[in-house]
Length: 120
Image 1 (cartoon, rainbow, N blue to C red):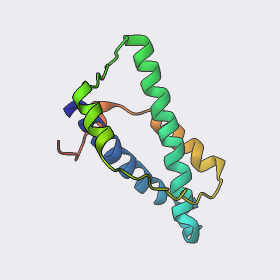
Image 2: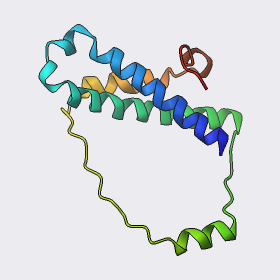
Image 3: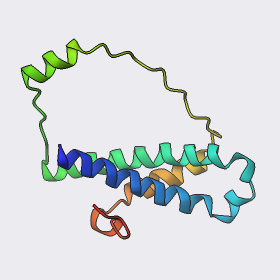
Image 4: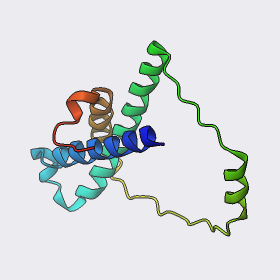
């Protein structure tokens, strides 16, 4: 659980840093009214690139983590009266260049180098 939490927080911090840097590019600053839509395109590409990077790493190093659910946990979860919430789909600009920039940055993800300025 701690490993999954650390990876999630680490990836979230990396996405935040890189998307913020992307928005500071001169060609994006000129389109400031649609900055959040460009940011969403970039983040979607970044996540796709990160997914590819982790897939390649797993394929080459055979790293796998198996999560086993305990029967008591499943029983407790099923006893909860949880409701599902519909999430709104973020607005995107549909800009392929923003997506590709994010994808390339996600593929270049390097664990140790990305941690600069991030506290665990």
